[in-house]
Each structure stands twice: as structure tokens, then as C-alpha cells.
Image: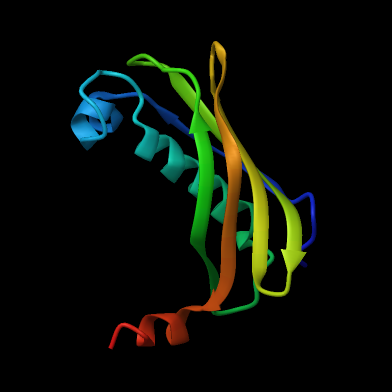
Length: 124
């Protein structure tokens, strides 16, 4: 059952592949904002996956986040998502990311529950 409080954490390590310079979001060898955003989405998706009906998944529709501190190569990053509201198919999460030094990002994320087959059929 989808209810407030469901949560999950997704983890990664900062490598050359997920730096700002590699992802094109900057030119420094630090954890990229797009990589942080993807990790936050992964945590949110995982938080509710086991509670979805057969054949359903969630898709991200909105992410509002701040990347407030850089993380170095080799840093361990953990992104956590907590389901804070359920409005029909609309799910709202509080998301945050941290490394060994503390919080590196925070925000809100919205996902919608969709039927996999019907969603993919929209592609034509």
C-alpha cells in the first residue's frame, strides 16, 4: 500500500564517470548535479516499487533540488527519498543527498504511478 513514510536510500561513489566534467554539466572533477538528481530519483523509485500493483511503475515528472556542496572523487554519496504525500497516482517525496562530510543536496520530487504497457504504447 502506498502511504506516507515509505523511504529508500540509493548509493554511489564519485568516479570519473559521474563528475561534472564527464557529464557536461561543468568542468570540474566533482560529483555532477545530474548524477545527484538521478540518484535522488532512484531512491524515490525504489521507495515505492514493492508497493505498486502488478504491471505498474513510477515515472518522474518534477524535481526541484539544490546542490549545495561539492563532493570529491572517491566520496560515497547516499541519496534518500521519503514519500510525503499520496494524491491518487501522484507521489511527492522529500529527497536529500549526503557524503561523508554531510548534506550535499536537498529538494522535492514528484512521480506518477503508470501502467507500464499503456505508458510505453504512447511512444507509437
